[in-house]
Image (cartoon, rainbow over the protein chains, first blue to last red):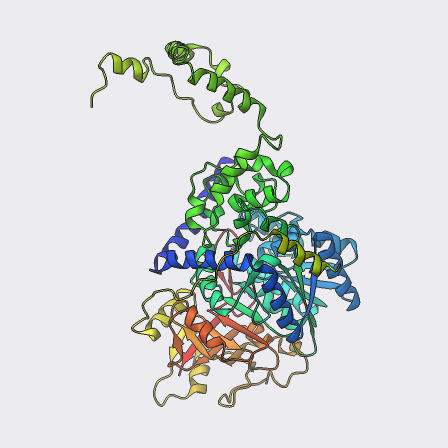
Length: 443
Length: 192
């Protein structure tokens, strides 16, 4: 992102954060809700076997067909098999980060299935062959002119018309045709309720509902951590989710899918893909509480300025840093640097995931997994040597102001990352200790 | 072992500490005027709220709100201006082109403007494909918040049910709010 884009991205995400604050502050018991949500999640996760079995029994009694997938490959194979059995050629999807995690779309396309994303942001990215840069606002990094150009090319909209209403209406027309002609629909799940066997999906656009209202087949992909014990737990989560995500009192649609539509089939695929392993990692298991609202991204000073593509894991921001490390510490270790440990994410998380503490903990583990930065290690060793020798330290400090006068290129070069795009502070002529000894420090 | 058994075994192996389910009774005052709160929140999310006046005719009221709606879908006996009955269509696709859907909501939620609609038509498509949606709601059926709402949900037997709060919307292009994404472009709740 260039400077202008960075500033726009930063300001826009901060606006969403402020909307969240306004909505949260309308509820006096907000902090109690966060505490309850966290406790419900910890309880559910620590009895997950029981709740998954209960959910499955109830969902099957409701007439749904439940599948279990150990990993992404098994999930994808199950979905393809269901589609093939129904001879479905066109699948219309609503937003699901789990299917991104499983790389479902390229797999289905390689097997001859036409996949149509129906969330506006997701559709824009699909037409661009790009990945989401935010889990709730997937196309937040794009400017309206870029979308206008794309739609000109793909949906034959008017030249140079980048009015958001005009473009949204064009997508509405285009996708309505897809909803009406799809052979199958797919949704993710915000919650799976154990004691009723139902799936709850929250959207603002109504795309999940449009998809499931027409196609004779509905496939739900759900991570096993999405279990909620009962309706009274949903009362807590639904009050927190939209307020935290976009600063709305509720999503426009909170849909409860309990039984298949008359004459239709509903399949639910429960996906593990590393989640059961995370349960056993007590230092990091709280990442499983996440309800994917994105509030930690909106508040993160690093995310706001760098955008989602700056992270190497497909989920960015504080939660993405942690989920990436749980997936593969070696592969995603560089993301742990994208954090100033300001702890703002901990404060906004609606389910009290200890995001910043976990990032700090991962940083402590970097050396043991062979991912510690070599230069930083040398600097640390050097500084330890210096700080434990007061006389040496004071002598070097006396010489430090010399640096203020050496040629610029010796300080501002590629070896000094801190000098990129910012001025280094000058060294003071006298250290605090010297000033103290001379009696220059007044109370 | 099946994948189900393997996943369950892995979960059981990995759970080290267990936690109790908290008592879910958040403190919170109810609204003194739930209708006022419901109306204000609904309007803040771009929904329209109309109170049917004493002696006012419901069908005339709806017609005045949507004078140009040529195709009107409803299965409600009190509605006489409907042109399609969503209970009598063979496929949901026949509801494509519906200008106005008129449906019944069971109760509203004061805190967030949601209206609970357990599927009460043959094709739920009518809730979503209609260009505009009218929801009829008994004004004495408004609860304070989602805790009370989910308490009430137990009394409904539904295969599908949805909380709707206002028209469909998106802000996916530059965070600019656009009302009318895939679902209704406008929603009016008529309090009766």
